[in-house]
Length: 150
Image (tube, rainbow, N blue to C red):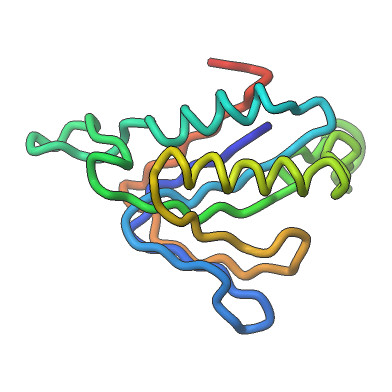
């Protein structure tokens, strides 16, 4: 799994002009799922997301996490995080999981994050043409790959 985590003051997702999810203060998480991903990847990544300390404390240092600020998550499935650009100029997406594998893991991630934060997670619609709006705070953008834990 790959995640792009953006600290935001606000973020929203629209499908066909209708808002499917919107948050203030928290993370916009773009989530890519590949065929090799398992529940172990999901567990590790969900813990990282929820416990990531990138919000400012009283001294302006990034010492607080989502739970410390009562933060929110907007989770968006994004298969293009597994784009291969090695050959040519048209990206390939063969590493991205097909919907029959990706949808259950995406839905499990929603449930896991919701359980860990003890609140509803806002989402897009899997496979839809989504329009994402955000105000990146900082900017702070973190990239995480469960197969390359740096």
